[in-house]
Amino acid sequence: MVKCSSTSVFLSLLFLALLSFYLAESYGTADGMEQWGYAQVRPKAHMFWWLYKSPQRIENGPTPWPTVLWLQGGPGASGVGIGNFEEIGPLDYNLKPRNSTWLQFADLLFVDNPVGTGYSFVESSSLLVTTDEAAASDLTELLKQLYNKNPEMQKSPLYIFAESYGGKYAVTLGLSIVKAVKSGELKLKLGGVAIGDSWISPEDFVFSWGPLLLDVSRLDSNAAEKSNSMAEKIKEQIEAGEYGKATNSWGDLENYIISNSNSIDFYNFLLDSDMDPLGAAASNSITGSNTGLSLRRYSRYLSTKVASASDTLSKLMNGVIKDKLKIIPKNITWQEESNEVFTALSNDFMKPRINEVDELLSLGVNVTIYSGQLDIICSTKGTEAWVQKLKWDGLKNFTNLARTPLYCNGSDGGTKGFYRSYRNFHFYWVMHAGHFVPYDQPCIALRLVKETTQSPASY
Image (cartoon, rainbow, N blue to C red):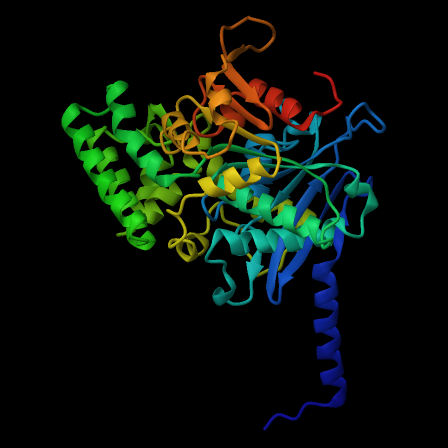
Protein backbone atom coordinates (compact mmCIF):
# COMPACT_ATOMS: atom_id res chain seq x y z
CA MET A 1 0.00 0.00 0.00
CA VAL A 2 1.24 3.49 -0.90
CA LYS A 3 0.80 6.08 1.84
CA CYS A 4 0.31 9.73 0.90
CA SER A 5 1.69 12.37 3.21
CA SER A 6 -0.29 15.47 4.03
CA THR A 7 2.36 17.46 2.16
CA SER A 8 1.84 15.52 -1.07
CA VAL A 9 -1.93 15.84 -0.78
CA PHE A 10 -1.55 19.59 -0.26
CA LEU A 11 0.73 19.90 -3.29
CA SER A 12 -1.70 17.92 -5.43
CA LEU A 13 -4.60 20.15 -4.41
CA LEU A 14 -2.48 23.24 -5.01
CA PHE A 15 -1.57 21.98 -8.49
CA LEU A 16 -5.24 21.42 -9.35
CA ALA A 17 -6.15 24.87 -8.06
CA LEU A 18 -3.37 26.47 -10.07
CA LEU A 19 -4.41 24.53 -13.16
CA SER A 20 -7.99 25.75 -12.81
CA PHE A 21 -6.79 29.32 -12.36
CA TYR A 22 -4.35 28.93 -15.26
CA LEU A 23 -7.02 27.81 -17.68
CA ALA A 24 -9.42 30.57 -16.66
CA GLU A 25 -6.90 33.39 -17.11
CA SER A 26 -6.18 35.23 -20.37
CA TYR A 27 -2.77 35.75 -21.83
CA GLY A 28 -1.47 37.89 -24.65
CA THR A 29 1.27 39.87 -26.31
CA ALA A 30 3.20 42.57 -24.49
CA ASP A 31 1.58 45.33 -26.54
CA GLY A 32 -1.92 44.12 -25.66
CA MET A 33 -2.92 43.71 -29.32
CA GLU A 34 -3.53 39.97 -28.90
CA GLN A 35 -5.21 38.12 -26.06
CA TRP A 36 -6.05 34.45 -25.71
CA GLY A 37 -7.08 31.94 -23.14
CA TYR A 38 -9.33 29.10 -22.08
CA ALA A 39 -12.86 29.46 -20.76
CA GLN A 40 -14.35 26.59 -18.81
CA VAL A 41 -17.82 26.69 -20.36
CA ARG A 42 -18.97 23.67 -18.37
CA PRO A 43 -17.18 21.59 -15.76
CA LYS A 44 -14.29 19.83 -17.55
CA ALA A 45 -15.18 21.44 -20.92
CA HIS A 46 -12.62 24.02 -22.05
CA MET A 47 -13.02 26.39 -25.01
CA PHE A 48 -10.01 28.18 -26.50
CA TRP A 49 -10.37 31.76 -27.77
CA TRP A 50 -8.01 34.23 -29.44
CA LEU A 51 -8.75 37.97 -29.76
CA TYR A 52 -6.89 40.31 -32.11
CA LYS A 53 -7.26 44.07 -31.68
CA SER A 54 -7.09 46.05 -34.88
CA PRO A 55 -4.19 48.47 -35.41
CA GLN A 56 -6.67 50.53 -37.48
CA ARG A 57 -9.07 50.84 -34.56
CA ILE A 58 -10.85 54.21 -34.46
CA GLU A 59 -12.03 55.48 -31.10
CA ASN A 60 -14.97 57.90 -30.93
CA GLY A 61 -15.71 57.51 -34.64
CA PRO A 62 -19.08 58.14 -36.32
CA THR A 63 -19.95 54.51 -35.54
CA PRO A 64 -18.55 52.27 -32.78
CA TRP A 65 -15.61 50.04 -33.62
CA PRO A 66 -16.94 46.50 -34.21
CA THR A 67 -15.76 43.05 -33.14
CA VAL A 68 -16.20 40.07 -35.47
CA LEU A 69 -16.65 36.62 -33.94
CA TRP A 70 -15.66 34.02 -36.56
CA LEU A 71 -17.33 30.59 -36.43
CA GLN A 72 -15.89 27.79 -38.58
CA GLY A 73 -17.91 24.88 -39.91
CA GLY A 74 -17.26 21.18 -40.27
CA PRO A 75 -18.70 20.55 -37.73
CA GLY A 76 -15.39 20.12 -35.96
CA ALA A 77 -13.22 22.46 -38.06
CA SER A 78 -10.88 24.84 -36.23
CA GLY A 79 -11.61 28.55 -36.54
CA VAL A 80 -8.43 29.42 -34.63
CA GLY A 81 -6.49 27.61 -37.36
CA ILE A 82 -8.43 27.64 -40.64
CA GLY A 83 -10.37 30.90 -40.37
CA ASN A 84 -7.44 32.68 -38.78
CA PHE A 85 -4.45 31.54 -40.82
CA GLU A 86 -6.12 30.53 -44.10
CA GLU A 87 -8.88 33.12 -44.51
CA ILE A 88 -9.16 36.39 -42.57
CA GLY A 89 -6.54 36.69 -39.81
CA PRO A 90 -3.52 39.04 -39.83
CA LEU A 91 -1.05 36.33 -40.96
CA ASP A 92 -1.23 33.42 -43.41
CA TYR A 93 0.00 29.91 -42.64
CA ASN A 94 3.51 30.98 -43.67
CA LEU A 95 3.26 33.76 -41.04
CA LYS A 96 3.35 36.40 -43.79
CA PRO A 97 1.10 39.48 -43.43
CA ARG A 98 -2.27 39.11 -45.17
CA ASN A 99 -3.26 42.18 -47.19
CA SER A 100 -6.92 41.22 -47.00
CA THR A 101 -7.18 40.66 -43.25
CA TRP A 102 -10.51 41.67 -41.76
CA LEU A 103 -8.59 43.49 -39.02
CA GLN A 104 -8.72 46.47 -41.35
CA PHE A 105 -12.34 46.98 -40.30
CA ALA A 106 -12.87 45.16 -37.00
CA ASP A 107 -11.31 43.40 -34.05
CA LEU A 108 -11.33 39.63 -34.60
CA LEU A 109 -12.34 36.95 -32.10
CA PHE A 110 -11.60 33.35 -33.08
CA VAL A 111 -12.81 30.36 -31.12
CA ASP A 112 -12.35 26.63 -31.48
CA ASN A 113 -15.99 25.64 -31.30
CA PRO A 114 -17.55 23.30 -30.25
CA VAL A 115 -15.40 21.98 -27.41
CA GLY A 116 -13.26 19.14 -28.73
CA THR A 117 -12.33 21.19 -31.81
CA GLY A 118 -8.78 22.43 -32.43
CA TYR A 119 -7.20 23.55 -29.15
CA SER A 120 -10.49 23.28 -27.24
CA PHE A 121 -10.89 20.09 -25.27
CA VAL A 122 -13.08 18.06 -22.97
CA GLU A 123 -11.91 15.82 -20.16
CA SER A 124 -14.44 13.17 -21.18
CA SER A 125 -15.95 12.43 -24.60
CA SER A 126 -19.36 12.40 -22.92
CA LEU A 127 -19.04 16.21 -22.66
CA LEU A 128 -19.01 16.77 -26.44
CA VAL A 129 -22.08 18.68 -27.63
CA THR A 130 -24.73 16.79 -29.57
CA THR A 131 -26.91 19.72 -30.68
CA ASP A 132 -26.46 23.19 -32.15
CA GLU A 133 -28.31 24.61 -29.16
CA ALA A 134 -25.78 23.05 -26.77
CA ALA A 135 -22.96 24.58 -28.82
CA ALA A 136 -24.72 27.96 -28.58
CA SER A 137 -25.02 27.58 -24.81
CA ASP A 138 -21.26 26.98 -24.51
CA LEU A 139 -20.48 29.96 -26.74
CA THR A 140 -22.82 32.16 -24.71
CA GLU A 141 -21.00 31.14 -21.54
CA LEU A 142 -17.69 32.05 -23.21
CA LEU A 143 -19.04 35.49 -24.12
CA LYS A 144 -20.25 36.04 -20.56
CA GLN A 145 -16.74 35.39 -19.28
CA LEU A 146 -15.17 37.70 -21.86
CA TYR A 147 -17.67 40.59 -21.84
CA ASN A 148 -19.38 40.89 -18.48
CA LYS A 149 -16.37 42.29 -16.63
CA ASN A 150 -14.86 44.13 -19.61
CA PRO A 151 -16.39 47.60 -20.22
CA GLU A 152 -14.06 48.15 -23.20
CA MET A 153 -15.38 45.13 -25.06
CA GLN A 154 -18.95 46.08 -24.19
CA LYS A 155 -18.52 49.30 -26.19
CA SER A 156 -17.79 47.29 -29.35
CA PRO A 157 -20.86 45.71 -31.01
CA LEU A 158 -20.41 42.02 -31.78
CA TYR A 159 -21.04 40.69 -35.28
CA ILE A 160 -21.15 36.93 -35.71
CA PHE A 161 -19.67 35.83 -39.04
CA ALA A 162 -19.92 32.16 -39.93
CA GLU A 163 -19.02 29.78 -42.72
CA SER A 164 -20.53 26.44 -43.74
CA TYR A 165 -21.90 24.51 -40.73
CA GLY A 166 -20.85 27.52 -38.68
CA GLY A 167 -24.00 29.22 -39.96
CA LYS A 168 -26.11 26.85 -37.87
CA TYR A 169 -24.04 27.74 -34.82
CA ALA A 170 -24.40 31.43 -35.65
CA VAL A 171 -28.19 31.60 -35.79
CA THR A 172 -28.66 29.52 -32.64
CA LEU A 173 -26.01 31.62 -30.88
CA GLY A 174 -27.68 34.83 -32.06
CA LEU A 175 -30.94 33.81 -30.40
CA SER A 176 -29.10 32.69 -27.26
CA ILE A 177 -27.36 36.06 -27.04
CA VAL A 178 -30.62 37.98 -27.45
CA LYS A 179 -32.16 35.94 -24.62
CA ALA A 180 -29.13 36.32 -22.34
CA VAL A 181 -28.90 40.09 -22.94
CA LYS A 182 -32.62 40.53 -22.29
CA SER A 183 -32.38 38.61 -18.99
CA GLY A 184 -29.39 40.66 -17.89
CA GLU A 185 -27.03 37.67 -17.88
CA LEU A 186 -24.85 39.03 -20.71
CA LYS A 187 -23.53 42.58 -21.16
CA LEU A 188 -23.09 42.77 -24.91
CA LYS A 189 -24.51 44.57 -27.93
CA LEU A 190 -25.30 42.22 -30.80
CA GLY A 191 -24.67 44.03 -34.07
CA GLY A 192 -25.84 41.26 -36.38
CA VAL A 193 -25.38 37.76 -37.77
CA ALA A 194 -23.71 37.07 -41.13
CA ILE A 195 -23.80 33.56 -42.58
CA GLY A 196 -21.66 32.65 -45.57
CA ASP A 197 -22.28 29.52 -47.67
CA SER A 198 -24.02 28.08 -44.64
CA TRP A 199 -25.70 24.71 -44.08
CA ILE A 200 -29.01 26.22 -42.97
CA SER A 201 -31.32 23.88 -44.90
CA PRO A 202 -29.76 20.52 -45.84
CA GLU A 203 -32.90 19.48 -47.73
CA ASP A 204 -32.76 22.47 -50.07
CA PHE A 205 -29.06 21.99 -50.70
CA VAL A 206 -29.23 18.29 -51.63
CA PHE A 207 -32.09 19.05 -54.03
CA SER A 208 -29.98 21.76 -55.67
CA TRP A 209 -27.03 19.52 -56.50
CA GLY A 210 -28.51 17.54 -59.40
CA PRO A 211 -29.98 20.51 -61.32
CA LEU A 212 -26.92 22.68 -60.70
CA LEU A 213 -24.41 20.09 -61.88
CA LEU A 214 -26.59 19.21 -64.86
CA ASP A 215 -26.66 22.90 -65.85
CA VAL A 216 -22.87 23.16 -65.73
CA SER A 217 -22.46 19.82 -67.59
CA ARG A 218 -20.80 18.03 -64.67
CA LEU A 219 -23.60 15.45 -64.42
CA ASP A 220 -25.58 13.97 -67.30
CA SER A 221 -29.36 13.76 -67.19
CA ASN A 222 -29.36 10.17 -65.90
CA ALA A 223 -27.05 11.00 -62.99
CA ALA A 224 -28.98 14.18 -62.21
CA GLU A 225 -32.22 12.20 -62.08
CA LYS A 226 -30.65 9.65 -59.73
CA SER A 227 -29.31 12.48 -57.58
CA ASN A 228 -32.81 13.93 -57.29
CA SER A 229 -34.17 10.51 -56.33
CA MET A 230 -31.56 10.17 -53.57
CA ALA A 231 -32.44 13.69 -52.40
CA GLU A 232 -36.10 12.62 -52.13
CA LYS A 233 -35.05 9.84 -49.77
CA ILE A 234 -33.15 12.35 -47.63
CA LYS A 235 -36.21 14.61 -47.55
CA GLU A 236 -38.38 11.73 -46.34
CA GLN A 237 -35.89 10.87 -43.61
CA ILE A 238 -35.72 14.49 -42.45
CA GLU A 239 -39.52 14.75 -42.36
CA ALA A 240 -39.66 11.52 -40.33
CA GLY A 241 -37.12 12.89 -37.86
CA GLU A 242 -34.59 10.22 -38.86
CA TYR A 243 -31.71 12.69 -38.86
CA GLY A 244 -28.94 10.16 -38.30
CA LYS A 245 -30.12 8.13 -41.30
CA ALA A 246 -30.37 11.35 -43.32
CA THR A 247 -26.74 12.11 -42.51
CA ASN A 248 -25.69 8.72 -43.84
CA SER A 249 -27.82 9.18 -46.97
CA TRP A 250 -26.23 12.61 -47.49
CA GLY A 251 -22.84 10.93 -47.50
CA ASP A 252 -24.11 8.36 -50.01
CA LEU A 253 -25.36 11.14 -52.28
CA GLU A 254 -22.09 13.03 -52.15
CA ASN A 255 -20.19 9.87 -53.04
CA TYR A 256 -22.59 9.12 -55.92
CA ILE A 257 -22.09 12.60 -57.36
CA ILE A 258 -18.32 12.32 -57.01
CA SER A 259 -18.34 8.97 -58.80
CA ASN A 260 -20.49 10.27 -61.66
CA SER A 261 -18.83 13.66 -62.14
CA ASN A 262 -15.24 12.41 -62.37
CA SER A 263 -14.55 13.54 -58.79
CA ILE A 264 -15.84 17.10 -58.72
CA ASP A 265 -14.73 19.34 -55.86
CA PHE A 266 -17.79 19.99 -53.68
CA TYR A 267 -16.50 23.44 -52.77
CA ASN A 268 -15.90 24.72 -56.30
CA PHE A 269 -17.56 23.13 -59.33
CA LEU A 270 -14.76 24.35 -61.62
CA LEU A 271 -12.30 22.01 -59.86
CA ASP A 272 -11.72 18.28 -59.57
CA SER A 273 -10.98 16.76 -56.19
CA ASP A 274 -7.80 15.22 -57.58
CA MET A 275 -6.51 18.68 -58.50
CA ASP A 276 -5.75 18.95 -54.78
CA PRO A 277 -2.50 17.11 -53.95
CA LEU A 278 -3.93 16.19 -50.54
CA GLY A 279 -7.08 14.59 -51.95
CA ALA A 280 -5.81 11.09 -52.65
CA ALA A 281 -3.93 10.80 -49.35
CA ALA A 282 -6.92 11.96 -47.33
CA SER A 283 -9.29 9.58 -49.11
CA ASN A 284 -6.91 6.66 -48.62
CA SER A 285 -6.86 7.29 -44.87
CA ILE A 286 -10.59 6.65 -44.52
CA THR A 287 -12.33 3.30 -44.50
CA GLY A 288 -16.08 2.96 -44.68
CA SER A 289 -17.03 6.39 -43.38
CA ASN A 290 -19.17 8.61 -45.60
CA THR A 291 -19.24 11.37 -43.01
CA GLY A 292 -15.51 11.09 -42.50
CA LEU A 293 -14.90 11.41 -46.23
CA SER A 294 -17.06 14.51 -46.49
CA LEU A 295 -15.48 15.99 -43.36
CA ARG A 296 -11.94 15.63 -44.66
CA ARG A 297 -12.88 17.36 -47.90
CA TYR A 298 -13.78 20.47 -45.91
CA SER A 299 -10.37 22.15 -45.85
CA ARG A 300 -8.83 20.70 -48.99
CA TYR A 301 -10.22 23.43 -51.20
CA LEU A 302 -8.12 25.99 -49.34
CA SER A 303 -5.04 23.97 -50.24
CA THR A 304 -5.59 23.66 -54.00
CA LYS A 305 -3.25 26.50 -54.90
CA VAL A 306 -0.42 25.58 -52.54
CA ALA A 307 0.84 22.01 -52.21
CA SER A 308 1.07 20.73 -48.62
CA ALA A 309 -0.74 23.81 -47.22
CA SER A 310 -2.78 21.62 -44.90
CA ASP A 311 0.35 19.90 -43.64
CA THR A 312 2.00 23.30 -43.21
CA LEU A 313 -0.92 24.54 -41.11
CA SER A 314 -0.85 21.46 -38.89
CA LYS A 315 2.88 21.84 -38.28
CA LEU A 316 2.38 25.54 -37.57
CA MET A 317 -0.40 25.02 -35.04
CA ASN A 318 1.39 22.18 -33.24
CA GLY A 319 4.75 23.95 -33.37
CA VAL A 320 5.37 27.70 -33.46
CA ILE A 321 1.83 28.74 -32.50
CA LYS A 322 1.51 26.23 -29.67
CA ASP A 323 4.86 27.44 -28.34
CA LYS A 324 3.74 31.07 -28.58
CA LEU A 325 0.47 30.52 -26.76
CA LYS A 326 2.17 28.57 -23.94
CA ILE A 327 -1.10 27.45 -22.32
CA ILE A 328 -2.11 24.60 -24.65
CA PRO A 329 -1.92 21.33 -22.66
CA LYS A 330 0.89 19.09 -23.89
CA ASN A 331 -1.49 16.21 -24.58
CA ILE A 332 -3.60 18.32 -26.99
CA THR A 333 -2.69 17.86 -30.65
CA TRP A 334 -4.32 20.41 -32.94
CA GLN A 335 -6.22 19.01 -35.94
CA GLU A 336 -8.01 20.83 -38.74
CA GLU A 337 -11.14 18.77 -38.15
CA SER A 338 -12.34 16.55 -35.35
CA ASN A 339 -14.10 13.31 -36.30
CA GLU A 340 -15.32 13.01 -32.72
CA VAL A 341 -17.09 16.38 -32.85
CA PHE A 342 -18.67 15.56 -36.22
CA THR A 343 -19.88 12.18 -34.96
CA ALA A 344 -21.32 13.70 -31.79
CA LEU A 345 -23.39 16.11 -33.91
CA SER A 346 -24.37 13.57 -36.58
CA ASN A 347 -27.99 13.40 -35.37
CA ASP A 348 -28.28 17.21 -35.55
CA PHE A 349 -26.35 17.62 -38.79
CA MET A 350 -29.33 17.44 -41.14
CA LYS A 351 -31.71 19.54 -39.04
CA PRO A 352 -32.72 22.82 -40.72
CA ARG A 353 -32.31 26.19 -39.02
CA ILE A 354 -34.65 28.28 -41.20
CA ASN A 355 -36.94 28.99 -38.26
CA GLU A 356 -34.02 30.45 -36.31
CA VAL A 357 -33.26 32.85 -39.17
CA ASP A 358 -36.93 33.84 -39.21
CA GLU A 359 -36.90 34.47 -35.48
CA LEU A 360 -33.78 36.65 -35.69
CA LEU A 361 -35.38 38.74 -38.43
CA SER A 362 -38.63 39.11 -36.44
CA LEU A 363 -36.60 40.30 -33.44
CA GLY A 364 -35.04 43.03 -35.58
CA VAL A 365 -31.55 41.49 -35.63
CA ASN A 366 -29.56 42.33 -38.76
CA VAL A 367 -29.10 39.16 -40.83
CA THR A 368 -26.67 39.04 -43.75
CA ILE A 369 -26.22 36.17 -46.19
CA TYR A 370 -23.30 35.84 -48.58
CA SER A 371 -22.96 33.05 -51.11
CA GLY A 372 -20.18 31.98 -53.49
CA GLN A 373 -21.29 31.41 -57.07
CA LEU A 374 -19.15 28.26 -57.56
CA ASP A 375 -20.03 26.46 -54.34
CA ILE A 376 -21.85 23.13 -54.54
CA ILE A 377 -22.32 21.89 -50.99
CA CYS A 378 -24.02 25.13 -49.85
CA SER A 379 -24.97 26.29 -53.31
CA THR A 380 -26.50 29.65 -54.14
CA LYS A 381 -29.42 27.79 -55.74
CA GLY A 382 -30.08 25.98 -52.45
CA THR A 383 -29.65 29.15 -50.41
CA GLU A 384 -32.17 31.03 -52.55
CA ALA A 385 -34.60 28.12 -52.13
CA TRP A 386 -34.54 28.18 -48.32
CA VAL A 387 -34.73 31.97 -48.22
CA GLN A 388 -38.06 31.72 -50.04
CA LYS A 389 -39.35 29.56 -47.17
CA LEU A 390 -38.92 32.39 -44.66
CA LYS A 391 -42.12 33.65 -43.03
CA TRP A 392 -40.57 37.08 -42.42
CA ASP A 393 -43.04 39.80 -43.38
CA GLY A 394 -40.48 41.67 -45.48
CA LEU A 395 -39.62 38.76 -47.80
CA LYS A 396 -41.86 39.78 -50.70
CA ASN A 397 -40.52 43.33 -50.76
CA PHE A 398 -36.98 42.01 -50.46
CA THR A 399 -37.47 39.61 -53.38
CA ASN A 400 -39.00 42.27 -55.64
CA LEU A 401 -36.06 44.66 -55.29
CA ALA A 402 -33.51 44.91 -58.08
CA ARG A 403 -29.97 43.80 -57.23
CA THR A 404 -27.04 46.23 -57.16
CA PRO A 405 -23.87 45.09 -59.00
CA LEU A 406 -20.64 45.05 -57.02
CA TYR A 407 -17.12 45.84 -58.23
CA CYS A 408 -13.63 46.02 -56.83
CA ASN A 409 -11.57 49.15 -57.53
CA GLY A 410 -14.31 50.70 -59.61
CA SER A 411 -15.53 48.65 -62.58
CA ASP A 412 -12.09 47.24 -63.46
CA GLY A 413 -12.15 43.49 -63.80
CA GLY A 414 -15.88 43.22 -64.35
CA THR A 415 -18.76 42.36 -62.06
CA LYS A 416 -17.66 40.77 -58.80
CA GLY A 417 -21.06 40.32 -57.21
CA PHE A 418 -24.58 41.59 -56.55
CA TYR A 419 -26.27 42.97 -53.47
CA ARG A 420 -29.85 43.32 -52.26
CA SER A 421 -31.07 44.72 -48.95
CA TYR A 422 -34.42 45.38 -47.33
CA ARG A 423 -34.81 46.48 -43.71
CA ASN A 424 -32.66 44.14 -41.60
CA PHE A 425 -32.08 41.47 -44.27
CA HIS A 426 -29.10 41.65 -46.64
CA PHE A 427 -27.83 39.28 -49.36
CA TYR A 428 -24.51 39.25 -51.24
CA TRP A 429 -24.09 37.11 -54.34
CA VAL A 430 -20.31 36.71 -54.82
CA MET A 431 -19.07 35.91 -58.31
CA HIS A 432 -16.05 33.67 -59.02
CA ALA A 433 -16.05 32.38 -55.44
CA GLY A 434 -16.55 28.88 -54.10
CA HIS A 435 -17.37 27.79 -50.58
CA PHE A 436 -14.64 29.93 -49.00
CA VAL A 437 -15.56 33.47 -50.05
CA PRO A 438 -12.86 35.35 -48.07
CA TYR A 439 -10.20 33.19 -49.72
CA ASP A 440 -11.56 33.37 -53.28
CA GLN A 441 -12.80 36.96 -53.36
CA PRO A 442 -11.05 38.87 -50.57
CA CYS A 443 -11.94 42.27 -52.03
CA ILE A 444 -15.70 41.63 -51.96
CA ALA A 445 -15.37 39.94 -48.57
CA LEU A 446 -13.76 43.09 -47.17
CA ARG A 447 -16.54 45.20 -48.62
CA LEU A 448 -19.30 43.11 -47.07
CA VAL A 449 -17.50 43.15 -43.70
CA LYS A 450 -17.24 46.92 -43.73
CA GLU A 451 -20.85 47.37 -44.81
CA THR A 452 -22.25 44.74 -42.45
CA THR A 453 -20.38 46.03 -39.39
CA GLN A 454 -20.71 49.73 -40.33
CA SER A 455 -17.01 50.02 -39.51
CA PRO A 456 -15.78 53.63 -39.26
CA ALA A 457 -12.52 52.66 -41.02
CA SER A 458 -12.13 53.72 -44.65
CA TYR A 459 -11.05 51.55 -47.57
